[in-house]
Image (cartoon, rainbow, N blue to C red; front, side, top):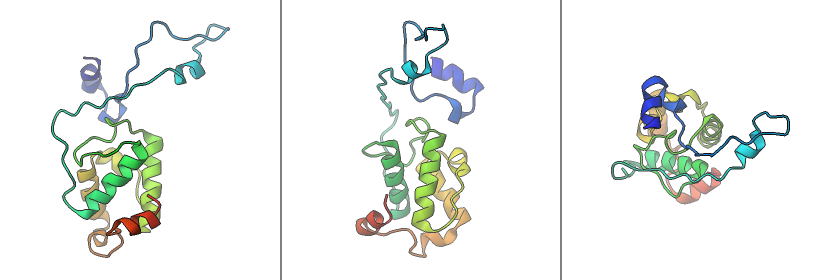
Length: 151
């Protein structure tokens, strides 16, 4: 219910992926919120998929999904799963942009993930910017090439 309420008034990327219930806010000796103690609270992330996971439609989407899954520390993700609903944040956006930039040798705008927060929509976004990625061979075609790209 809280998530639904927030979705009505916040942009999608600002709705928290994880909620942690606490009995009381941890306070420092001076009475202020103890941010270190908050950061150390146990977090159990459980993504509830409302539909079946959609597999990649092509090698380019598969590559992007693999990078996202690695950065998000998930075994796999579907091409229609929302990056932010999976626990993504702005720091992870930057990590993905950096990895893809090294892999493709092209500038990857981090803002793209905010605009297109699913693998399928991000693939369309990137191919609109760099159509040659689909055919130039810059996207590694096999596992050995991907490992060389440090995914």
